[in-house]
Image (cartoon, rainbow, N blue to C red; front, side, top):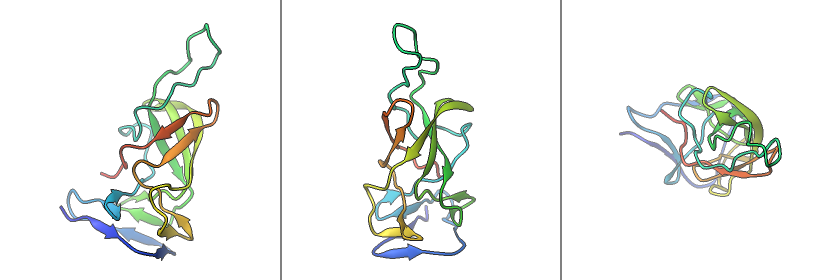
Length: 144
């Protein structure tokens, strides 16, 4: 396994593609960088609170606790073919058809490695799901 580990104060700019070896990941320190994925990929978060719409006593329209990063605000720096997340949009709901939008929050786990001066998001960073205000912590990077 050949990981690419980014350390220290580093600001990535321009078009750049990291190509880790077979089974390798792009990491910031010891933590994997989050990447943009498709909603049909395995979820990056499986423990988000459900969006309670319509309000009780009706049951939630889409109670799934699964969340994906579907759009990174960075498109120029990639891990393989997937843009590395440095803020972005997320979606919560059923695999293949999530319905609830959210925003990836600034990284709490990385302050030193940036893309155009925006910190790279890493595993355990969070997003807020807009309709509910609930938070989703990412336990998987989405890198393959």
